[in-house]
Amino acid sequence: MKIILFPCLLIILCSLSNTYGQTNPNLSNTTDEETFKVVEEIPRFPGCEDIEDLETKNKCAQKKMLTYIYKNLKYPKEARKYGIEGVVVVQFVLDIDGSILDVQPIPDQSSRDLGSGLTEAAIEAVQSMNNMKKKWIPGKQNGRPVRVLYTLPIKFIL
Image 1 (cartoon, rainbow, N blue to C red):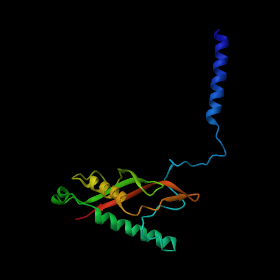
Image 2: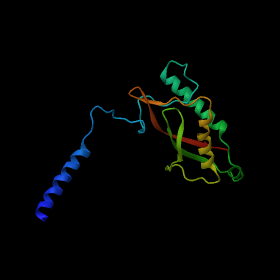
Image 3: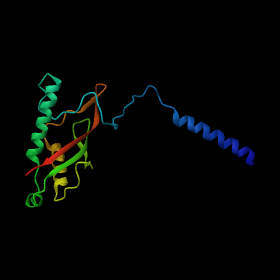
Image 4: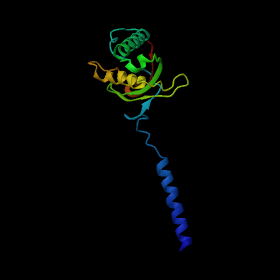
């Protein structure tokens, strides 16, 4: 019985491994859920859509985003009291509809947990962009909107 069982199990295992290794060539290489780190067209903060030159448009969007962040950033009272300054680096996903998902601080060699609520304040400022009337223009890959991982350093200076 063992002699017959072993070859049968071997055949089943081999056929399963072939099934898992196959892909359908008609399917796209990307799914709606895939998150990209690098894309052909980067996501842009709204407000500069009327500018023709792509480089100028991206610089304008970057400036508007930073203006928004620092206008909406609430410096925590405790951090002010103790003169705490520094950089909090946050990472988030820009979804295909321009909304912001999964905002998290990321460890970096140049930053550490500064304490006194700075990390929370940075996260709140980024999350508040979901309340804007105009959403981000999503990043694109192969001409289609895709999810993009975005990293943003936020400086706290008194």
